[in-house]
Image (cartoon, rainbow, N blue to C red; front, side, top):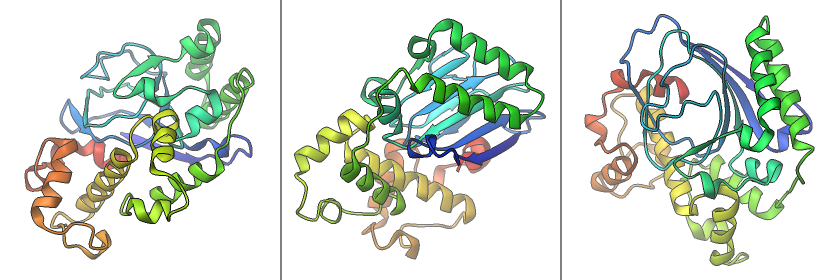
Length: 267
């Protein structure tokens, strides 16, 4: 499997998109079905390789989909010849750029042609398949998104968007009190999250912590709740276990990293 990551250096799109990813599956040497964690952000994804049942849990057959916030691990079925290019939004980026609330996409996805139009989407998919290299594919997806964004009114919610950035910077290892600092009403923050992020702020923070823990586990199999990088967030082993199981349905010691190689690469 080859994974290529490209930071979003476009002056317009950088306010909404973190980066782009191109993944090409060749010579697979791990389990047919791979479990991956919730990512904490929406994704616009185009498939330009072979057709297949990549989204094992949900059976999505669309070649172009917008994926919302997931609140649990998802089983994927990569196959040799699967090729994907993804625009990875900032958690609030999908709403701010296209006016599409992730709330409607929680734990699901939609065919992006419902937003961009069938003819436009199919034409873009064809351009991906005929592009001679990934640089041209990357240039093409940037141009496609910018062109489509002209149909929508862009938004910016400086105070709340910046709070989300702060939570991400802390890997979710932060308290509500530290976020709000007595300046923002919790109810207003919850409304913002529901509409702009798609999930409650607590779930969002839990997801970020879970991703952080997984990354550390892949770096160090003996990683545990008392590790200094967790900044004392977990008060005991049971707390750590419950937080981990909420998304993976497995205890940390039962999580077999060898069966989730794709998850490690995504981390």
